[in-house]
Each structure stands twice: as C-alpha cells, then as structure tokens.
Image (cartoon, rainbow, N blue to C red; front, side, top):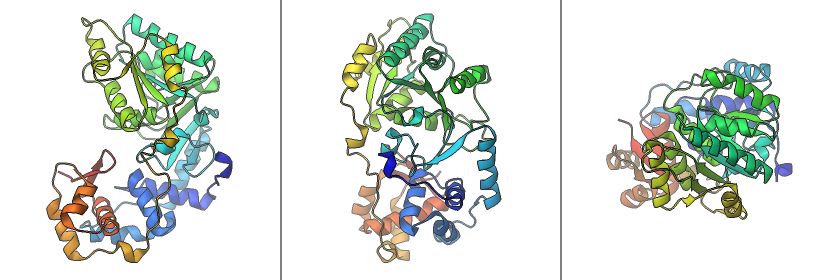
Amino acid sequence: MDATRSRLSPDQRVAWLRLIRTENVGPATFRTLINRFGSAGAALDALPDLARRGGGRYISVPSQSQAEDEIAAAEKIGARLIAISEPGYPPHLRHIAGPPPLVTVLGGDLATHERTVGIVGARNASTAGRRMAQMLARDLAAAGYIAVSGLARGVDAAAHEAALATGTIAVMAGGLDKLYPEANIPLAQAIVEQGGVLLSEMPMGWEPRARDFPRRNRLVAGLSLGVVIVEAAKRSGSLITARLALEQNREVFAVPGSPLDPRAEGGNALIQQGAKLITGAHDIVSELAHARPDQAGLFETDDIELPAADMQASSDDRTRLVEALGFTPIAIDTLIQDTGIPAPAMQMLLLELELAGRLERSGGQLVALKG
C-alpha cells in the first residue's frame, strides 16, 4: 500500500508543518484547507482573510524559519517527520477521525506494523496488574503483535519493558525531546536502542500539558487494532483511551479484577458495558484475526475537493449559523438541516469560525461555540 504513496518535497514539508502548527488549525481543519485550496502553500496565503471573515483579527502562523528549525531539531536527535501522504506513516492511524497530518517518529520502522495492540492501565498499578501487562505484551509478541502504549508509569511501562526485545511503540503527549515522565526516559532510550519507536504529533520542544494526554490516548487507540485495559479506576485516562478506541471502531478488551480494588472498577465497568473479558493473549489474538480498520467504512481517507463557487456563503448564512450554534456540541448534519445552509457553504463557514478561534470540534462531527 505504501509503495503507491509519494514523499513531500522539502518546500512542501515546510509548508505542511507551518499549516498544522498554525493557531486554531487542527487535523480536521488542515484537511479541509488542503482539499479546498489544493496545497498547504495556497492555504497559508488564504488564512488571514478566512480568519477575518470568521470574526477574528489576527492568526498566528509560524514562519518558514521556525518550521525549518523544528525539522532540524528533529533531525538532530535522529527523528523524522512523516506526512500522512508518505510511506512510513502508521497505516491504522490513517483510518481515524482527524488523523495527524504529520507525526514525528524516532526509532525503527515499527510504526508501519499492521498487527498492533494497545495495552494501557493504571499508573499506580498493583503488582498483579504489572505482571498481567508484562505477560500480555510478551505473549502477544510471540504471536506477532506489537505492543503500543503511552510510556506512563505502571501498566504502560510494564508493557513496554516486556516487549523491548521484539519492539514496542510509545506515544508521547509532548515533543520527542520533552519525554514524560522523566523517570521513564531510560525506558524510552531502551525502546529506541532495541528497534522500537517513539511517536508524537506535538512540536519539538513541546512540554506536555494535561489536555495533551487525551490527544496522546487517541493516537494509542488509532495505532492499534484493539486496546486492552489492564487496570483502571472509575475515572481515568485509560477509560478515555477505551472510549476513543470504540469511536474509532477498534476492539476493546478488559482484564477483570476484584470488586474490592478501586483500580479494577473501570475495567469491570467496561466488561459490563460489552468490552471483551480476557484472561490471556490468546483471547485477544482470536478476536483480532480479521480486524481491518481500513475497511470499517467509518471515515473516508480521501475527501472530495469542492470548487470555490460551491463553498461560498452569504453574510446571512453566516449570521444564521452563529445564531444556531451554542456552547453545547451539535452535529454538523443537524446544523445543515436546521439552517438550510448547503453542506459546502457550511463547511467553509465552520472553517472561518474555527480559524477565528470561535469554534471547537468534538467527536469528529460535533461543533460548538467556544466559551
């Protein structure tokens, strides 16, 4: 599949990086801009006018030298930026809502491995939880699967450690030169030295914030055919990963635990809600034998480029849309139905509002005004 994909030229890579690092431009907005204007360079030229029409005054766009500096910083540590259009981009990641246009990768070629399983769980894992994560990672490796996790303490670290010999993928919430937690930096180094991969969608030099970890969890799920929850409290990042996996049409597995252990509450609740109860790697392997995210049909990988005339919107359309929007997320299809604004024009209006910093997206097709 990758053989048919083309590499970006150096100028294109810089333009792509500038666009995705632009204020208020996320993966979905990036994709809309590329489809509308045909190239990142043309989209960059159009940004100021789009933001102004959406009610914004100024939009911060990285300079060419800033983008070149980020590329140089990645290369300095041996990392590489891979575009979604290029060979080497994680195949399963292409089939999620809002895949990152560019990822920074350090290490081997495991990111292209198609047999992957996410293993996540509590940071304050019990000894039994850590041992279970290690057993799963080792047995899955023996069956030809790569363990994917987030390099956190506890279950994540146990899974990575057990899979070092065969390779593992660790997804970062910050830049690859800002590894977190510091206690696991030696583990991250061992992952790379033994042929594994560190991966991030965040810029070099980016210190991870609390809001960045759900984004990281989305990539853990997106890189995997299925996700295993080993231990998780009732409200935890691991349950966010499970929810994101379900949204991405991935399998969700959970290890049962004692009802007396708060670290088992989340996993047990997932099993009650339909997650597959597992006692070993064999349960996972049998379920994933025919998993194909690329055939899920949930997300199209190639949008249709619409002519400019079809995307024009009047000032009345803009006013009607803003009046229809609120602070509660609403489906774009519902907005189209309620306002009567044609879909192409709606797409352009939402783009303008997002670039102006007035709109936020959630769950792919849900939008709301920013508070």
